[in-house]
Image (cartoon, rainbow, N blue to C red; front, side, top):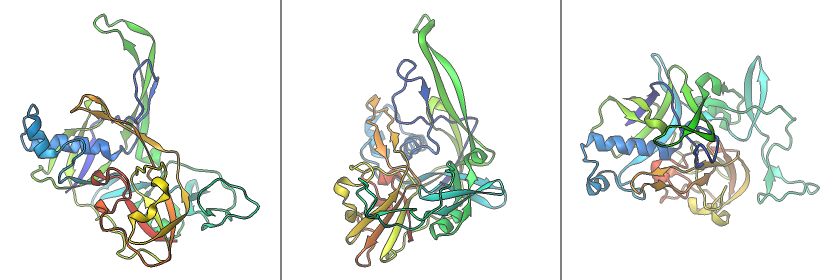
Amino acid sequence: MQLFLEAFDLWLFRDGRPFDALSDHLAESLFPPSPSVIQGAIRSYHLVVKSVDLRDKNKIAETVGTTEDYKDLRLRGPFLARREKGKGVFRYFPQPADAVSFSKEERYKLKPASLPRKIPDNLVTSSPVSCLLGLDDEPAKEVSNLWLTEKELLAYLDGEEVIGTSASELFQKESRFGIGLHGQSRTVKEGALYQVEYIRPSQGVGLLVEIKGYEGWPAVGVLRLGGEGRGAYFQQVEAPAWPAPPEILPFPRFKLYFATPAYFAGGWQPEGGNWSRFFTGEVELVAAALDRYESIGGYDWARHQQKPARRYVPAGSVYYFTAQEKISLAPHLIQNALTDWGAEIGFGQILVKEW
């Protein structure tokens, strides 16, 4: 089942930082939201579909699991997507972190950074990787917040130049101000001015999520999604199948593009740099391109407490590997995801290409 979700008006998807009017004056939105946000909305609506009494904790756990057990649910996404009349729904992906950008007739064109090569002897670096990206590239003005269609992204990962779409063409961020009030008196709290950032998708733009394990959903409907109980209109759609990784990975060099955030115990990599446990053979990470981490937390409604915030490798990150023999992704991986947590609900989704 593939669902296309559209906002009635605005969406609010806060990042993982605790927020109230006295601790932090700005609540920023992550867009697209993290898979953990989507799984909460999907599981909650599935309880409605199955007519589960929300006071019956045992029945809830039997139907959708717990905070640690997702039972049969498997999610892929959410992905930013746009519906084109008569053509269908198409995914968009964040600009790869290894992209070199330049202006092209008032549009921004992207090309991959020059391939990794050994770090020169006269260059001192604390990096744990053995190669650097882009050493042969001409300096260029950095451009961020560009998005690529799936077709454009696959062409880019094959080494082609592509033209990106500005985020402002797909969605707008709108800030609104408020002020904290005292309980029953409703009088103003001194110094409690705050700002909240909302997302307004453009016409025909929404979120695409693939769901396995749940049945009985209507073809169309409405569910709650994001902060402030805001809603989303959903419709079951036919969208292009997710590109499956090759059975044998490109040899002897391959790169991974992370289409959704990933969590690793070692921060930007697995603990101890042990990437080989995700594969059927030994691999070496030689270079990586990634932006600042994303902090993702949330609220555990079952336990009425904040979930611990984790730092995630952001979507758009690109990792370069070498292998000494032909290998595949490890058979124990859930949904072929590379992540230490959340593979069932969509974290760590990757695209694989040769470099």
